[in-house]
Each structure stands twice: as structure tokens, then as C-alpha cells.
Length: 256
Image 1 (cartoon, rainbow, N blue to C red):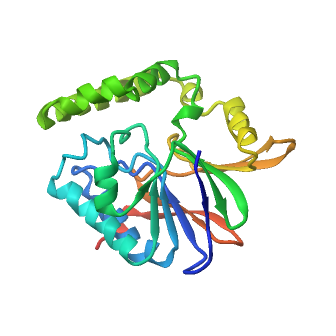
Image 2: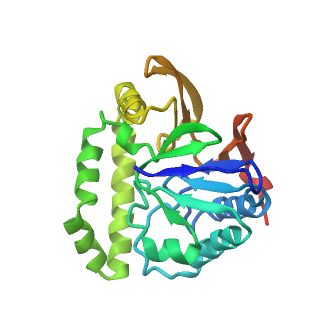
């Protein structure tokens, strides 16, 4: 667990995003993200990317023009004084220190406790909360092991690309036959997480179901905020010391 404090030296404004699934075949999403970085995020002191920034991540040795464009855009934002933090998702968990360094963003543990304007807040991608998806959790455990990652990273880039495409197709097929209940979070796991970290607010992505859920944890009122995906619109959580608001913007209105 890591802990981060927020001050108000720049602008008392923080953004949270997740599940952009950036890919070369979706230039509309990329344009929306670049517009967000250029026009909205520059006003903030901090940007948290809570996983699945990319549709898939082949490894930090992928230096394609598309990857470099995203890296440079994040670096440009950081150069303006906005701190950028990243938590791995289920699609880009191989993203490493090399890409983080060249993008001037900091990698965080998969569960991180931050001090958000005086409030202890737990942030994560959210896939670990979906404990009823037994098949996915088994794959997650294997894919996070050192031996699996060592084998994958040792393969040529074109082979990794084929594997990623096959996995994406298999994942889409598996998702189509799973019930919505299985793919959503387990309430007990949410409460356990909040109580473990003595927090009343959890922010995550992964489920693609943006909402603010009122729950009970630590014998008090608590909230679970789910970030939206970027398949059909840009989506982010805007937080100031006084308010929290889930926001979105149509993709077609975010042309650079």
C-alpha cells in the first residue's frame, strides 16, 4: 500500500480516469484523450490513471509511433506541473518503469491509499473486487507471476502481438456468455477493502459502470465511485476540496 498527500499549491483539482483502452484502430478515443490532456488536465495538480489506459500492452520495448505519441502527451502534461500516477489494469499490467519514466508518470501499487484533500481514499483498477469471476481471477494470478511475465517478455514483439490479439478475442467471447452479476464487484470484497484501509471512499474502474454507490463500511456511511469507460465518450471524475463529479464528453467533440 502507498499513501499520497495532496496539497493546494497549484490548483485544488484532481482527475481520475480509467478504461480508455487506447488502440490504433480507435483514433476517436485517442483524440479525445489528447484533448483531455491538453484542455482539462492542465488545470489540475494531479491525474490518476486507474488502469487499462491501453487496450493491451505488449511491453516497454514497443516504441511504435502510436505509443510514443501517448507517452509524449503525458510527459508534456507532467512538464506543466501536473503529477501523473498510474495503476495497472487487466489489459496493461505489463507496463513497466521504462515507459513510466519516459512519460514522467509514477507507478503505484494495485491498491493505494491517498489523502485526497483531507480524506483517506482507496484507489485501484477494480478487477480484484470481482471475486465471482473465478476464471478471470485464475488467469490474473498466473499472469502476475514472475515466471509467466518472464516468458512473455522474452518472446519477439510480433509474437506478443498475436498473443494479445488472441487473448482479446477469447476475452470478448468469455465476457459475452458471463452474467453481469459475475462480472461486477463483490460487495463483501468492497467492504473488506474499505475496512482494511480505514477509508469511507473507494474509487475504481474496470466494470465500465459509472456510478456513485452508497454503502456501509467501518459502521459508517461510505461511497464507491466507479469510473466510466471511453468506448463511446470521454469519462472522468473531477474532484475538488468541495465536490466530486463524474463527467463525460462526446468523442466527436474532442478533435484536436
